[in-house]
Length: 308
Ligand SMILES: Nc1ncnc2c1ncn2[C@@H]1O[C@H](COP(=O)(O)OP(=O)(O)OP(=O)(O)O)[C@@H](O)[C@H]1O
Ligand SMILES: [Mg+2]
Image (cartoon, rainbow, N blue to C red; front, top):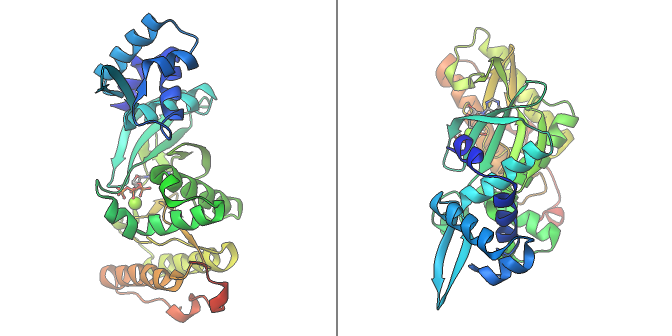
């Protein structure tokens, strides 16, 4: 879908999308007059491009009294980010969708050295904001909002999730933890190395393989998670067999948009959940137990140092 759409737009279309995106915070629907002010194109050209973008469902047109206003849709924002990655030489082409979850859509892409990479586009969790409010990603976003001194309503959830994921992965990668190499961040989109043993085919998830040495794998996950918590100061918050990739005989940790710092008030609850997910998975599937206790992982931090 996105791989086809990106071929249908050019620099001028993207310039219009950029202006619509930039004015998103100020107007729900942007009038043609405003676009004319901000763009070096004729009224005719802008109108023609807006017709095209509306028919591609990248932009929504809606009557505002006697005028028509325009609003950028999610696909339009996807296009700006992918366009930027291409323009900045981070990728040469976006290829095909490799995954679609509740919270994200993933595409494979290729860079100029012909390495495979993943484009992860973050989404709103559900249509209802209520659910987002209760989600861990949102707790993490709120924390980020407090750090940046922003009011809640100014926080763009998919963008915040992408930021949290990218910056968490960067810290982990730089510290030598096995995560895909984070490459770039643009709005709500994270670009990262693709873990694949065959060209363009993602390496399998832990849940889809039969390990020959499950006890070693379990202890490795426990050791890595202990390091992540104690040395990096991060809690994954959704660690499970669904978010660990088996790659080149090693294990890699993915899916970090809900990561929180260990100072987060409910960090221990999340650590406990992560610990139980992993230990019960290995117990049920392989009948092996870890030598590490949950207490080994829990944070001992003074109450007054905890944040929100
Ligand atoms: N860097 C990567 N290399 C290879 N495959 C990846 C990579 N990142 C993600 N994937 C694949 O895409 C799937 C979804 O990615 P991820 O877990 O990050 O997103 P998600 O929002 O949790 O999506 P879902 O709800 O489907 O789990 C993963 O289960 C994995 O198979
Ligand atoms: Mg996942």
